[in-house]
Length: 144
Image (cartoon, rainbow, N blue to C red; front, side):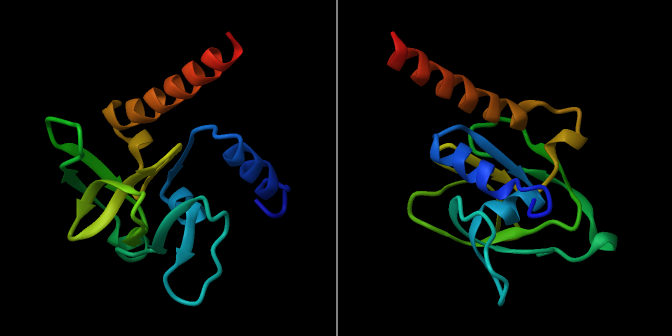
């Protein structure tokens, strides 16, 4: 992101209240704090994230998650996944695995420690689509 000058455009997009979805490394980028001595990147969400929280590449795994608002379990794919070890008051926790937050939402930012794009299950991606639809509706109401 630094090399191609994406940091400021993403921050500007965020400041414009546009929906943002960070998966895996995107969760790390969105956090306002990283566990350990690393400096946070974008600081878009009031969470503290532990990079590679479940281990390195060889510890990658799949797990059935209970996700807030979903009736049936969601098969999640974790690859060198982070997790949030602390969340602020305004953060809605959507899923937990082994007592660690693996999906959350705050205002117009959605994050997951897992890769919903690697499954055939579109339900988690649908959460983000609904956020986009709500955002578009708000813009349409302002311009009417």
